[in-house]
Length: 164
Image (cartoon, rainbow, N blue to C red; front, side, top):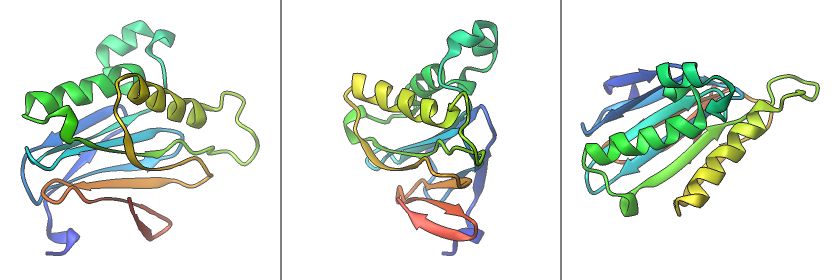
């Protein structure tokens, strides 16, 4: 079956989507300095993607309550909690991250992409979760895909596909 024939669920910025339906694809576009986190449990056939913009919710606690997926420190735990609610088990999860680019040619004063990558790594390390694959940094935009049945993850950038 070609990817164009699969049911796709689009994850917007500061959002997440999960599925238990084999054959469905979850995709998030425009990962610049943002991070896409894809998780998949092959045993429970559960997977999802989070697209967060900023590393820490303490910059705007009110916004974090309204949109927890906007921040890495609130969105990542929420993604895992929802996956567990759908039947995933921590020991079965494969985790992939993409994004965290430096979107401006000159050095970004705030270095959001790097800080977004660091917060993900810290959260996973603290919770004893290994990142199976990542493609972060650089200056390229990415679109991240996850196929629920197989757990295949890949990203595209400038028309090229890279499997993760």
